[in-house]
Length: 115
Length: 113
Image 1 (cartoon, rainbow over the protein chains, first blue to last red):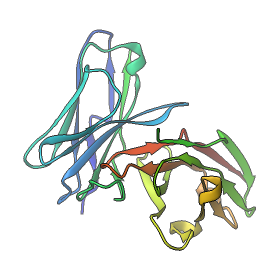
Image 2: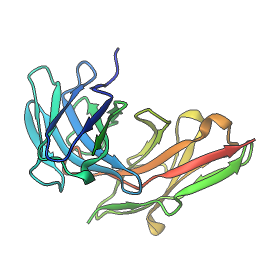
Image 3: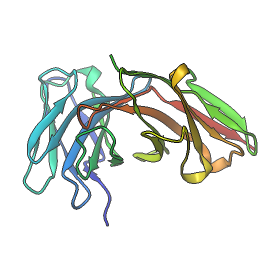
């Protein structure tokens, strides 16, 4: 079974631009979550999607958005990029989730650099 | 508010020595607790998890962790470290209200020969 796939692996953007990241979960997994990882901050929860609906959202500005398609693939969009958005963005999938007790399967991440 | 603290940013141990990584959590209810490991350039991999029952849980790669409610801790241990254990380790608590997890800032482990 293929793991969680994130594309692209690396991105370089300039301030003010927008970016879209993609995540394909493990086959059969219906929950997809996104995390921002920065040195010293660890992983911070962005949002979670289940059956094409955003089910949970973290404390990030509205510039960060996402969506999930009927095949469970998910995209994350960041508009009006700021220097502080430079980070590793990790996608994680799980079969169902819902109670915070399910193992997450992580992709290798997309490293975003904002210049 | 839920939170996880990993007091040690970086730890260096000799190969063959024992290891303990500290994790303290803040959560109102009985927590769902996890330890993940991240190797360079990789995503996170689950080492072990605690939901209830026996407070000493066994995981993969010879790791174990002990839940201590009185100390709000969930420390990770390994009796004999291997060079391949060098990685970043994250403790996390799962929110009962949804598929949302709170991670610590991580502990970077260096293993010297």
